[in-house]
Length: 186
Image (cartoon, rainbow, N blue to C red; front, top):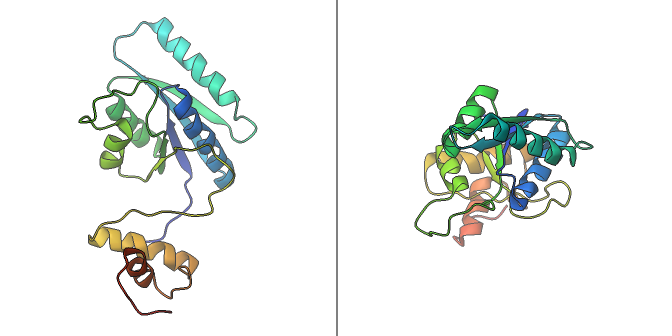
């Protein structure tokens, strides 16, 4: 399973300052990979046309800040946030979803999962959660894994591409090292 650079990215935004970081990172990644970028904002169903037009204008205005990096298409949908984001991903054939950790409209109930949590669970493509302001290209990748075969493959694949894993010959040895389990050195 080869991992290709993303070609169709979707950034979901609630137009808050926090998701502006995700918009910025999405524009940087789109420019870096010469990818098509779609920015999506979801409104509740049944809102007046004027509100949809206003939201679209706001989204275009926000995207103008990053026009020097990448051209993005602005889309406004109506419905349930997670459902509409997943539907837009499917409609666009997106191969990367970019979101903020939470927006300005976050509920304060710790028992409720956040939109990024729900998207990460439901998405069939990688989800990048942007928490900090972009400072250039990524230099380090952190991969969260469990003990399933899918996670084992996720560990092996980057190694196949880079042929190195911090001085270790194989990604499994590196994973054992990171978990604190002794393994054979390179």
